[in-house]
Image 1 (cartoon, helix red, strand yellow):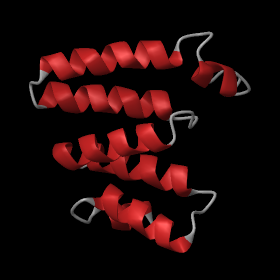
Image 2: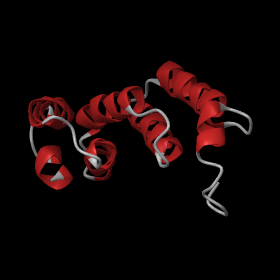
Image 3: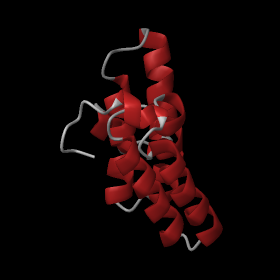
Amino acid sequence: MAIAFSDMAHGSEEAIKFFKKAGGRPYEDYVLYTIGMKNRIHGQTDDAIVALQDALKKFPYYKDAPIAQQMLVECFVIKKDYIKANDARESWWIRNWPGSEWYSKNSNQKGRY
């Protein structure tokens, strides 16, 4: 499902519309994050930025949010937008440092972070 949306223009926006119409699903967070990650891996930087920002906004406590945030930093570096890259780096630290809400909600992921 995520791969199909990642191949579409504005894939994350289309996925959000789909889940809104379908009434949401327990795997919606996984799909949104995967769209952004696939866009990044496939070199679709602009779509990756939108998708990763959408995923981080909608599901900030998702277990792989730090990885998505790092991919967002990479996208801004690729675009040579170093101010946004630095802002995203700082946001990564603030969101995920020990003691943060994300960290507290994901502390059961032993050995992972």
